[in-house]
Image (cartoon, rainbow, N blue to C red):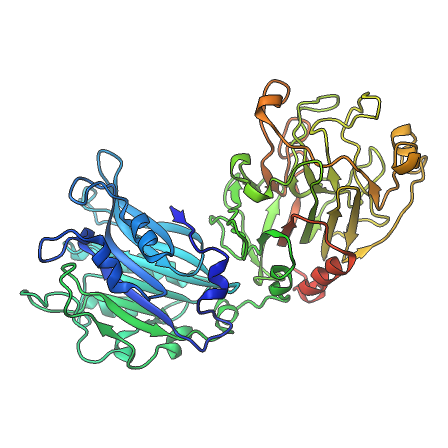
Length: 581
């Protein structure tokens, strides 16, 4: 579960890697489902104790779990009380579907999260499940991972297995990270020593308290039982120098839980993100982020198995993998990484979740920009879009809207970039209503799409003209009816003022199809088109024209960009510097 409350505003209102003058204010708190040692259940009291922190890790959080906390979604409520974003990792589930686990609350956008299940020893399959919540934060366009956990308290064997698994996850983390939570071990324990031992891979695991705090830092047992420190803030080795000496403290007065909240401040250097991952982006994502009209921007930095999430936009637009995990490889313009497609896997956002990617209407405008390395143009024909074609020729059940496609020879465009728009959703229709067997509305570039090298591909549609760009350049091309297989009157005489429609730019002045269930349920029973990347539904299948290659960046805009803006986007990627592997 991810709730977004501050989204884009968080990028400008709160501390960021780029600035680095203001430290991040961190807190971890086992809240005991908001029941204090005084017997009072008070979630607002819990929230007030961490108000002002930028990133907070909570443990023992109820989400409609049993009657003890009133069936409240405590994770969502903490997000509301703190006016921040929240992710929840449920580990224990009751008979009514309620959950108990850990949560992260962040003033920065949480762009993706997953909950890693932690192991239990043999014979303890019915013991309380434990997890490691992993969240990817976007801090001014730079990634930061934050982990939250609560390890076993009643089994040394379980805890040893869980420590080993935590180390494995951290070793594979591509970004600088922070890990907070209730570890149920003390600093003199074997488990502590095992966790913080020199890693075989990845970064060092550094305990923040010895640098930031004073004294023992006890976080339990202050109100009657044996005091101790079992609540920690750990950071990756690349962040250790940023731990602010003297910033650590424990609130020893509160009785809001049977644990005390722990606070630490951390300054994050601007260049840490790329260095920690041992990859360097070649380009400048801020050029994309600052271009007006941006509704989706994916940099493909997430590892296989994680949703690829839009950066710096109003809506997160998580691209989910279809067909299984899609590998992440080194080399890319904006994250230093790329997604590698094999023609058998692709990304998808269901139609119902497309949000502001669902660009449609008589006056709609759209632009798309991609940084890709395409292999095998005979097979690879799809970059991205909302484009469902139906079952084949003369099938009018499609729900096409807009798409960046390649290699469409039917109406001219073999091995070329051929961005499409459709006003009908199904097949193209002439002015008299007669139908083509296919959608015929697309621009065509004079030159072929590059194969086996990084390039940028783009198109714009201003409600009238459709333009196609390769490597930031618009290369105009007029219509040659014979060469382009466009001798139908639709192409030669139904353009503006009775002229031809051209090729690049191509005239299409009828807007973009909008799916309306009340009008189209019977004729287009498949519903509105998903937003897909790397494949589309064509001739009855999703994979017939799926793309093989690498995707390093993809952006969608809800307006027509100018030639200069497209050139600036291309320049921002520095495709010539991406490692040619």
